Length: 224
Image (cartoon, rainbow, N blue to C red):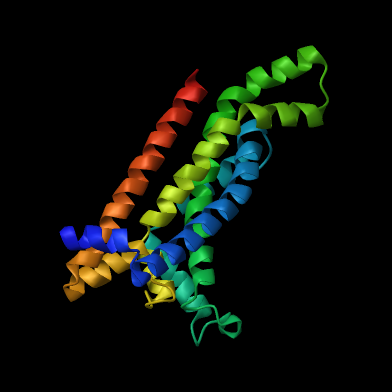
């Protein structure tokens, strides 16, 4: 434990590299997933149209896809014999981000759809009473959803930094290139390098605690 704390305090180069790759992957994938999931969630929550039920079932199915299966699909697509091999994305941070987006977007879509479905009716009534246009009604709905949007991003980021299966398959956990916190903890612990594994574990726990506190505060804002 003492050596782990020293690694954190001294700013160990390998530790900082792992944190940098993790931040790049998690921040990018959760932001892209947010940009995709929020509009989809608003559409599914506020509108009734043919095929909506099918889209909801499809989204819930995607939410239940095991990360390793997602990783396997991406591996096959981008490997040397896959149809997308010419893109040369396998074992890069970019393909890790893509895999994370596929895993996180359904989660954020469902998060937004659940909340918007509850407030869409009252918002429409308010907008109708005020004589607002469809565009202004949409903006009002978006404004009322601002806290769930922020909490959705935190939810997506939490999922991203905790992911192991998909990122290890498509990223390969290559040192100084695609090794992230979760894969590094597993890798270094298996090698007997407990100091670095514990250091990364401590940082991950602190991050998880911070994000859970932020989520709790946002949920209180929504409830009030």
